[in-house]
Length: 341
Image 1 (cartoon, one colour):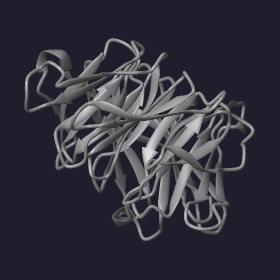
Image 2: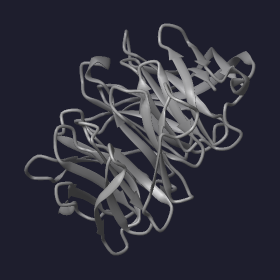
Image 3: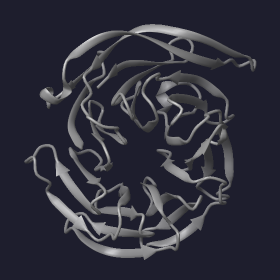
Image 4: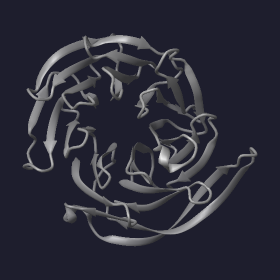
């Protein structure tokens, strides 16, 4: 199920939804969260936070697999869907197990504006070009398709054996698309001819997700795993060497999502990861040190992360819907859950 109407008010720890009947009743709950903090001197501090946060009846009746930000106060979440938003608009694409891709417009009717069909199996990756003119899609059928957004026509098609796509993202201001795969590799595609431009060194585990920095200089990928084996995020250079720059290890189950945090959040560059161990971690991008761990107890596997605005994150989960998290750098770095819906 796709819910395209959740509106966030960043000034208050509350969440509003245009589909109010779906959002359900608002409750205030007392929540205990464990956290760990890695100090500059290398010592690890551990403690418990107790706080009141706003919790609505879940908007979804099942697990939420993806959440994406349309604007600083508007997000879209999907149950078994993949989502890609068109920059600076209220339009987005969704893809599901029926092999089709749908284009939606929140300012239009409740019906999709466009339907694209071309994959032979479930569509597992979507990425919109920086100028919004093209859409790249990937599937478990080992193929990537390039679409003209204006006409809805497939203009390029490419396939690589055993390339089961898990995620796609477009490199800002460049004709390149980054792709993660179940064959444990990260590929960089040139969209001009839809050809593989570079294959990064193969990892030991399935690559579940990838993300590119705003400046297009670096990217991160996530690994599956269990019991601490695998379960890492990896930072790669996208400019010249294309080498591995840093690894972030500390999760105990599959890392499902990763994001670069806005530079305005702190003096140092940071990334965030979410995993099936129900934790969200914030890392020093340069050193790989874990700066903060938030445990969302009772939420089950955490499946998706998105930057909401300069102080907030959105996190999707199996059992408790979507979580609104606030990053606080006023004193020591802290990450708190302020709402769930």
